Image (cartoon, rainbow, N blue to C red; front, side):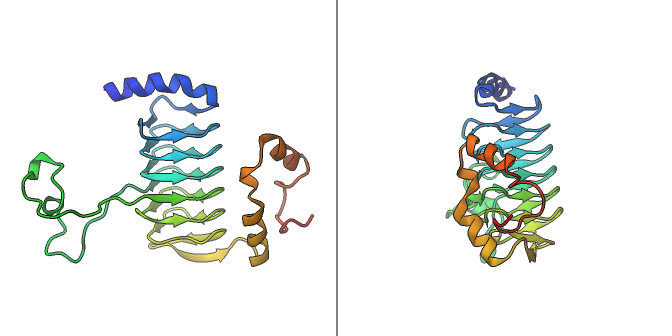
Amino acid sequence: MLHRIVWFLRSMKLKKKNIFRHWLSYSDKASSMEGNNYLAQRAKLLNSSLGVFSYVNFDSVVSHTDVGRFTCVGPGSWVGGIGMHPTNRKSTHRMFYSSNNPAWSGYASSTFEEVKRTYVGNDVWIGARCTVLDGVNIGDGAIIAAGSVVTKDVEPYSIVGGVPAKLIRKRFSTSSVKYLLSEKWWEKSPEELKQMVHAGEFSGIYMGGIK
């Protein structure tokens, strides 16, 4: 209950950065948000960071993950911080490598890296009910289809889906992807972005920088 009260008090200051959150959402002290963010109902941000304009939809958890700018996490998804178990030892049980639970304290004889940092790029769309495993890197502009389980790195501007997630297709041509990655529009100032919007650069079908 105390952590909820602390979060409520912290959230009062977030509005200065244009950060909004549903009263049932939660972000711990180890997490940060760059600004213009939103945490929907029951969304959780744990030991993670959110870039500007990125948001987490309802019932989703983002844990031990660095999320870039303008990224959307769909409802019911879990990104990072799931935890790993060794597969080449006699047992996969945590009691033999972790003593942080009193139920099995005193049995651990070695250590194991249970949680690896996960990285999600800029302008990424993670669909509903997706799972992104620990240590995965998702490139800029990628799309993760609804219900997917991402077990390995995703290339920039790729559309992946399935269990496990596999490449469906590239969003744009190789030259267009190269242009977008060099342009890095997500690093532009709000004024520059507004000019691009008014020029129609975010409307209609993208033609690789050619109007």
